[in-house]
Length: 315
Image 1 (cartoon, rainbow, N blue to C red):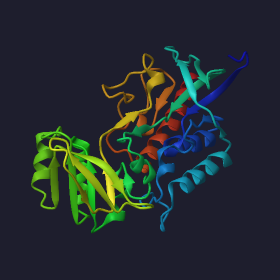
Image 2: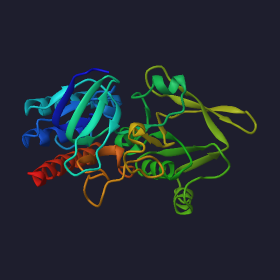
Image 3: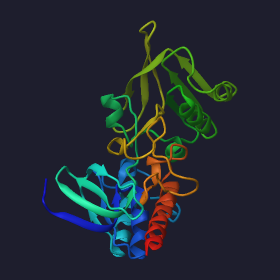
Image 4: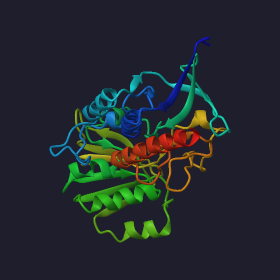
């Protein structure tokens, strides 16, 4: 490990809408933030080809371009954006204490405040065709991308509340929604199951798994397999929505910060405060409910304001 220890006022771990918005507000508050972006600079949104629902883009944009805009804005106000990954943390229990963060296994940072915006990673099935067609019809967010499949036929993979919510949302705008449920029953709540069953344009295929996504550059259909009979057949669709959950990127914070059973960081009340003084969490790393770019950006703003007020209370 490097012998050089850097001391900063505000460290932001992770990028994306939450991280960059926190950086913009922290910079304008003269907190001189330093951001380490993580391995995916710009976060999940850089895997989204089109963004049509973020305010301020009347003609839409793409995820990578939007993250570049936010990054440039943060840097214009003085944020130092660095490519690197936090690999270990040692958060102080003391008010006014110094938090220690290791970057890339060898660089030591000491920070008066830390804003965590490491996000959550959508779970996928691991099919080659699924990976190849991400952004070409394969998505993990119906609210983000469903609009592009209006009056078309789509597939939803999953059996929990998230899958049921995605399916009923898509049913309002798509011609037909086919749900692939691996077991012979839903894992969703009874209320969500009833909602699915009473929606006329949702068809549920039980004991059915996605075998392959069909198409060269865009989705043209899927091949599914009945896991009881091994019978396969193809379904023509233009969109495939994988709704099997998300994994919050919180492994390095285990034992340091309070989390729920799914691993999402717990924040107190309407704030972004964690259980450690001077440590704040924003975006999908603490939000398993909405998971939208605009809500992530909002909590990024909140985290910077919370950090500013925390430092002000120490003076």
